[in-house]
Length: 104
Image 1 (tube, rainbow, N blue to C red):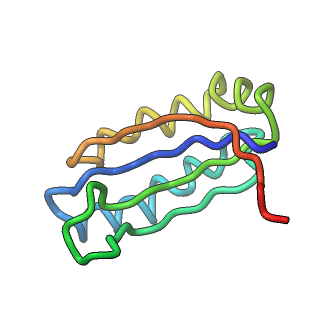
Image 2: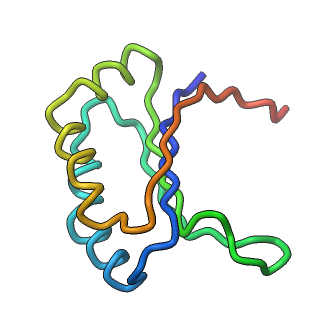
């Protein structure tokens, strides 16, 4: 089992500024979170070509609930979370869930 924090970013007012800030400033902040086993980021598109509900999605992976709790309580997480208002002009939705692979 892996625990994931999903971060879904709404459509920013200035996508180029969002991308620049996210890559230069926010990614290094998030990568410093203790207990992080993986961190992915992607731009969102839809299968039918309509406007997607989110601009991008980031996934922060932790080995287990204890690692997640330690990461969430860390100063590094506080810094990363505190940075979000600096670039997420389209809003942000965050949630956690435990992932279990069901692929044979």
